[in-house]
Each structure stands twice: as C-alpha cells, then as structure tokens.
Image (cartoon, rainbow, N blue to C red; front, side, top):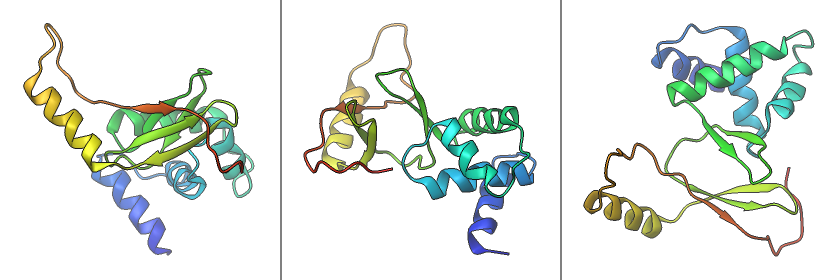
Amino acid sequence: MKNTNKNIRKIISDHHLRVTPQRIAVLDALRNLKNHPTADEIIQFIRREYPNLAVGTVYNALETFSEKGIIKKVKTDQDVMRYDAYTDKHFHLYCEESNRIEDYYDNELKELIENYFEKKTIRHFNVEDIQIQINGKFTDYHRKH
C-alpha cells in the first residue's frame, strides 16, 4: 500500500467518514491535480483508473469532504466551482483571462486580517472563516494546469 494511500485513508477516517475506494480516489485526484480542479477535471483524472465511477459519487464525495473541512471550495469570478485539497490558511491568486488559480501564502497579511477581526465585530454575525481571492493577471505568460 502506498504511503499516500495510507495518509488519505487516515484523513477520511479521522473525519469520521467511511473509507471507500471512491472517496480515496476523489481525494487522491485532488491531491495529485494541485491546480484547484473542477469536478469535471477530477472525474476525468479518476476515470483513467476507474472508468465506471459514477459522476454523482464524485460530486457527493466532494460535497461531503467540503462539509467536513477536508477540502475547500473555491469559486471563480465566472461562477465555476473549483476545489482545494489544502486547507491550511492561504489565499488565492486568480487570473480570469487564463482561469489560473495559485495558492498565495503571506503570514503578514494573514495576521493582519486575523488581528482585525479579533478586535472588530460585525453586528449579528459570527465570522467563521475568511477566504481571500486576489484577482489580477499573471505576468509570466505561461498557463499552469
């Protein structure tokens, strides 16, 4: 058994979910694709090994993983839902022209935002999570997939 497969099994079971081959395949695809894939891209990746996997199964697994905090949903300006297997605190750089999304880590920005909301309250609202997407254009002109 691959070490990665053991890690994926542990992540799933640690979140009190039944470990199934379908769930392992979905999370494995997300971790391999690393480009904030859409559900269709995940399905295409999985179908290389599991050609008969039902589309609904993939969508159900993605929704369950999102609800449990195993993955995060990333919605683009074009209303396309993409998925992120890495839930550590980070931001996203998004280019609408190329539809490219990249992770952006900035501890100073993270601390600034966290400190702001520790001191600032919003009436009748509890902040549970803050997701920031920075829109712009990449200047390196290559498109990552």
